[in-house]
Amino acid sequence: MRLGLRGRHDWLLLIGFTAVLLIFGRSLQDRLQVTGEIARLYGAPLAALFILTIMFVFHQTAKRREATMEAAAAALEAAASRARTVELESLMRFGHALARSLSTETLKETIWQHLPALASGTPVWVVLRTETGWERLTDVGAMRWDAGTVERAADTVVQAHATDIPSADGIEHDGHVCFPMLSGRQIIGILGICLDKCTLEVRRRLSAAAALLTVAVHNAQKFSEVRDHGMRDGLTGCYNRTHTLDILQAEAARARRTNGPLSVVMFDVDKFKSINDQHGHGGGDAVLAAIGKRLRELLRKSDIRCRYGGDEFLLVLPETGSEGAARVGEWVRGEIERLPISLADQQVAITASVGVATAQSVLESVESLIDRADRALYQAKAAGRNCVRAAGSSSRSNLRQDGSLHSFPASAIRAKTTS
Image (cartoon, helix red, strand yellow):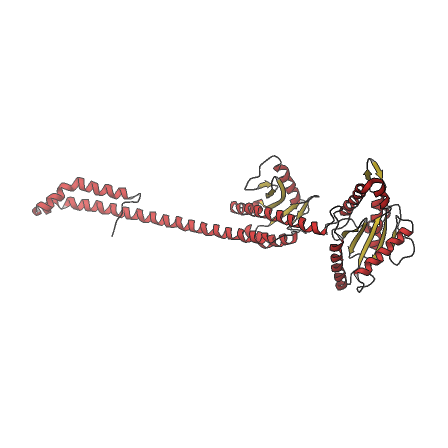
């Protein structure tokens, strides 16, 4: 058996050997020279051998214990290394999936598939910052967290970020650990998890996940901007004519499948040419931009806003019958009439004529539906402008012309919703 004197316990064995040689060296020499004195010297070498044996056993036991501890430490290190590898693989899969997510809907799907595993099964929430507040990417229906709960936590994080540098371990608030998603110095979203179930390992993973989400959200927003640039009118923010016709074809096909209603509203600005003549094309552009902004504020997300051409606008109203469409047309007319517009320090009053048409059957074409709305618009102009006409109706709209929203039942006002 080969012995090495390299361990931290080997010095004991070395001292033992040295002591035996120093103490009993003369006796060992006498044993070799005078064999007759073996009996007299027998006791001393035996004692030395006994001491040496004990020290050898102790040495081997210590080395075995040290080897066992080193093996256990190596096993723990290997387990930790495997865990880190699994963690990195999970984050890489999450990152690759996010790289393919170029819309809010695909981001929601990716988060639903990957984020629970990174959080070790603990419920997490993600919100994105918008112009009007926060948009949930998880728990959209507020089944786990009541409406406003995580949004208030996100608001607190934004306020804290104004004065403090966020920690890599997250910001604790009201039972949540929040991880800001920073694009430059701006918070574009928050990832959060319940504090009582969040370990340090989970915090580390979610901090990395928040960084990956930040890049994905930024890319999705840029992609949306580029896509919308080709689909929207830059002046009003409404969809352009080509894209709206594609949407209307899809909505018409859906109405045929579900046998649901579909309506359109077409309107233009009364005497728009005189506005351009008096205030120049810059004044006319200001009027159109103000109308586009107001439509964006008031209509539902499901309603399609389109600048159809010049000062003419088209609204596509899915799942809306003739009465609802007439109310929307009157609502739009009233809002435009009250729209405050100042051109060259002069208040300008504008009005609009509105035509409304509802698909008469599932077989009616998109072209026919738009044509009927256009003819209804010209009926409104022929009736004196600043009024609403429905296709197929020869009588003046019985809706009030003062534009008062309070003149309608609450159920008739189709305010902008998040649905």
